[in-house]
Length: 171
Image (cartoon, rainbow, N blue to C red; front, side):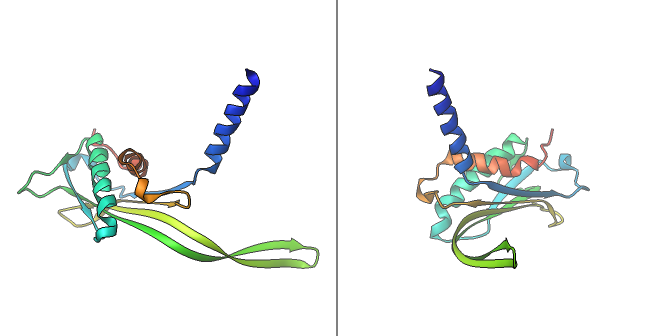
């Protein structure tokens, strides 16, 4: 029994190490009073058929995240206090990488090409009255082992929630 439990724990640890790391960055304007904002609207920056499915899922995720932070979706006919503007981007290509290898005779530099498959999400939250960015965040993730066609709404909700975790709630 202990051996089986050890194998399960080792397998889970290996899976956790193998999952691609999520790189998050965020910034909040220190002069902002979040309580002065109540409503939001969401706007995708890029268009196109390739993004229509993902944009729809991202809009749903941002709506859920903003409502959890006590913001309400703006009413038709009235302007929103803040705009959540986002852009998703997928990069497939190659990158030249250098590796410095110390040797007794000096440093040997090895060059090699590696495949790059990254997904990024950039977000600006903008004060609608002043058109100034009050919060911005970005995330980049290696998507080598991700089938974009199999993305689920719950997975996107988790990623968006992680990204805007540093955006303050109204209460």
